[in-house]
Length: 276
Length: 276
Image (cartoon, rainbow over all chains, first blue to last red; front, side, top):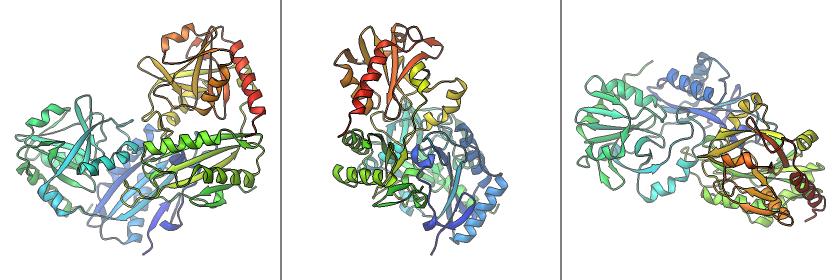
C-alpha cells in the first residue's frame, strides 16, 4: 500500500518525497517537530500539538507556514488518505534550503503518517526498567530535531535491558528520552516541570489525576526515588507505562502500583470516548 | 549548469537528489559531516578530513560505508564532474532510514560540491569583530550535524555586526561557531585544544607557525584577551581571518597584527604550492 506524506504544499507518495540535500534540517539539524496519535481515528489534542510546534518554532526563529486551521486540515486529509485504523503523525518544520550552509529564508514543512504501533501488553502489565543518564537537552522547552544523545544511547539501553533512559542533571530528575516522568508518594502525584519538554500526554494525565490525587509539579531530587511508592512515564505513543525499576533499584515493591493502575484505566476510558 | 552530488552509491544531479523523510539525519539530527576545499583544484588535506569524519562517525556509532581510497575517488570524480575552478566539498553521513524514529541500520552518505565563495578582501585587510556566547557543543570532538545554537545566533550576530560568534564556557574560550581561535602574546601563538573540534586548518597553521613562533595549545581564560596583542580565527573556507575586536574590546591596537599578517602570507604561499 502506498503511504502518503505532505511536503511543502503537496500531498505525495512517501517514496517519491525527498528533502533537498541543502536543507538546514539535514545540514545543521535545524528544525523542530511534534508528534501525535489518533484515538478513534481522530488526532488527539491536535491543536495543543500545533500550539507546541509553533512555540518550539518560535524559539528557533522559525515560523509555521500556515494557520492552525490549515495545518489541521492537512493532517486530517493525510489521515484519510493513508487509511490506517489508528495512526501516528509527525509534523516536521526545518529552516529550509540554505545557500551558505547556515542562513535560511523559507522553512520546509513535512508531515509523516504511520500506522500506530502498540507496545506489547506485558509492558503495561509488568512495568519496565529505566536507566539514568546525566544530560539536559540543549533547549528543553523546544521539541527540536536534535536527538543525538538519545539515539547514541540506544545500544547502552539495550545492553542494560532498559525500556527508556531517564535524564538527570545535577541531582534532579528531568525527563526520559521521549517521555515525561512521574512518581507517587502516598496519594500525591509528583512530576518535574522545569528544564523539560512539557508533554501533551503529561498534561492530560495531570488533569485526569487531579480528580482523585494531589498533584505537585516540582523538581524531583534523585534521592527522592527511594521514597517513591510508584513511578510511571507518559508519552504520546506509550500512554502511561508503569516503571518498576530504575538502574538497580526497585520502585516500591517492584510491582505495578495501584494508583498507577487507576490512572491507566482512567486514561483508557478517556481516550475511548475521545471524539473531538 | 547542472550541479552534481553523490548520494548513497550514485552521482546524480543535485536537483534530482532527495533524502528520505524517514532519515535519522532529518528526524533526529543524527549524523556527522566534514567540510573541505580545493587549492589548485586538489582537495586540501582530504585524507585528514576523511580521518576526522571517520572519528566523528565512530563517536555516534556510525560507520563509513567505504574505505578512504574509495571515498577519495568519489570526491575527485565529483569535483571533475562539477568543473568549478575551486570548490568546497561537504561529506555528510547520517544514521539513515529508520522505521521507529530512533534505531538505525544502514547509514546515508552524501557529498555536496559547491563553487568556492571567497570572503571580501576587507575581511583580511581590516580584520573582524567577534561576539562571545556561553556555550559548549554537545560532543565537541565530533563534527555533528547539530548547529542549532549556531544557526539561531545568526540574527544576534548580524545585529551586533559581528563576523563570528566565539563560544566560551566557564571563563574559558573554546572555539567559534565554525572556526578555531588563536591569540598572540608577544611572539607566542596560543590556541585552545580541549572541548573543541580540532580544525584541519588549525593544524596546518600550527605547523607553519612553529617555524617562527613558540606555539602553546592550552586553555585561554577570557581575562587573558586583554593581554593578547593579536587574535585570529581559522577555518577551511575562511583560512586565517584577523580578529581586531571581541564584544566591545579591541584586541591590541585594534589593527591587524604583524604576526598574523606573517602567518597569512605563509599560509597563502603554502596553499599556492599545494598539489598533493
